[in-house]
Image (cartoon, rainbow over all chains, first blue to last red; front, side):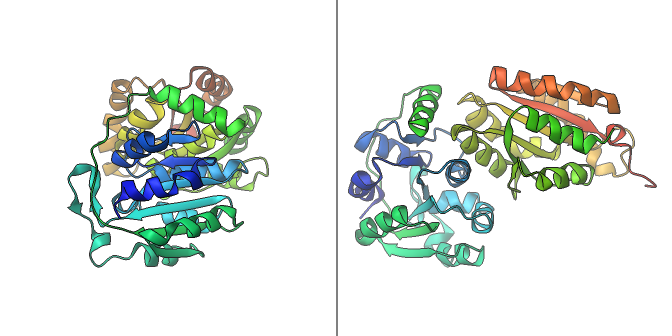
Length: 184
Length: 168
């Protein structure tokens, strides 16, 4: 499976939850597949989806899912010790690991070579790390959201993209409706 | 006056709940103070752009954030300031140790100091410079201003403000 197929698969699971979605194609795909006010789309700032979602999870009780990519986590590896050492039970970090920088032309990442992000996350102090194959993600993600324990999921999948329109929503609109959904 | 306590008091008085920090020698006391406070959630960051991501999330979760960092971080965070904090119009007080100013013992710090205000000006970030200890009296108003206008705001605090480096 490629990332857009995974997002289509998990859309019903994440629909009613707060989601912070990675820059570029992941946000464009999620926006096209199932736009929700509970989705925060990153339009810039590669690497910070996990940090934004984690900051949100720390200060309020609703479940938060950050949808990140292997390339973006590699960009902001410092996020994993922060998450591991300050674990928030309402937080799930979903790393869709297709071993490539999808939004920029599928250049390979080191996560697709020798580097195991699951092992990195464990070494950084994340206690509950699950590596899962794309087709098995649904139940694992559902359990992670329902659980009181913070979970890092590394979902291995194929590299590949589908053409999606750029998000033209104003960033302040994205932010405002998301904050209203947080409060609701 | 204890500057560290005054800064933490002003943060609390302005409902700042979430504070992230990347350390600097000048900031050690204020970092210790925010860590000690029960009414502040202190989450140290490994890098300042990561810290700004945490602050953005905390803000969207309904809590006022602040970041405490060194001025070298301006070089690290320009993209984050522009494409996250400014693009989505989020407030972010940045309490910054202004290394490389008068009474600085480390020459390399001057290399970033000479660019700090120019970069902040280029980014249209409101910037305040605390040089004497009494300048801290403005902090309360600067925090109110930051959360009124939903912008990142820089508070540069130099070595003279912190009382120098002792015998260095």
